[in-house]
Image (tube, rainbow, N blue to C red):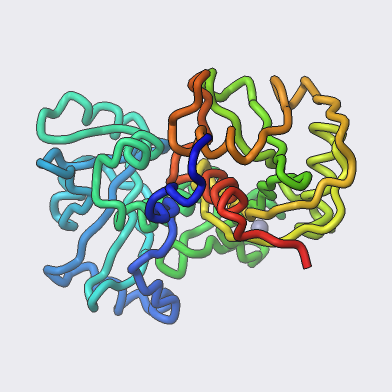
Length: 316
Ligand SMILES: [Zn+2]
């Protein structure tokens, strides 16, 4: 049996606690944004589609490029003003995905996906929130070049934070898709599931998109019932995490299970079952006798499970 008090220091949740001041009031002022971009302290994160461009360095690769360095990498698509850090501007610059792909030929650059960067700690974790910010907005631009109302090509305004339609004058804003991610609890047991997409040993919280006209609590209950046949009563919000694959907001909750018999929806899940606190503790510590694991510490599922194991959750 593992000692639950020995889980170690609380790990940092990935993509959160950004050091950047988004300075949204600057976005409409194109001259001010241009001046910030011309300042020698300005830096940019560069990416193309799912691919992030890093400068190789030791021990950590460098995620920031000067504006001149970024421009030299290839033709640029949108540039997003991410905000200010100690008065210096940070931008997100999008390259055509094929341009980013072609940069793999360069020895001085590391071209890889954001999941690998986060899981393998390939750069300073402080870069993860602004990279997530840039990636989500750039992805939105790539798929919203035409007005959803009238079909006309739209124009980028507000330093990358809006697209306007010159034909019907509709304004379009970057979207965030809310996802409920939850741990159903039955006393000293919790409910974990496995997607067929997971690594063979990984078990995690259930999750699903919140639908229009639905509360977070109702989405938690509906998704848990649909995927596992388990009905839940009380739902307690825990924490949230931006999840830029491509533009989700994970809303973490604990839910009180009121039934116990699992019926797995195999269209959604490979399997689901109840786990004891001792078993989950071993999974968090990567000491499970069968090699079973929870998701890594950068993912909110790890934190949702960890908080329950540490008895930090109560329904009142
Ligand atoms: Zn329009």
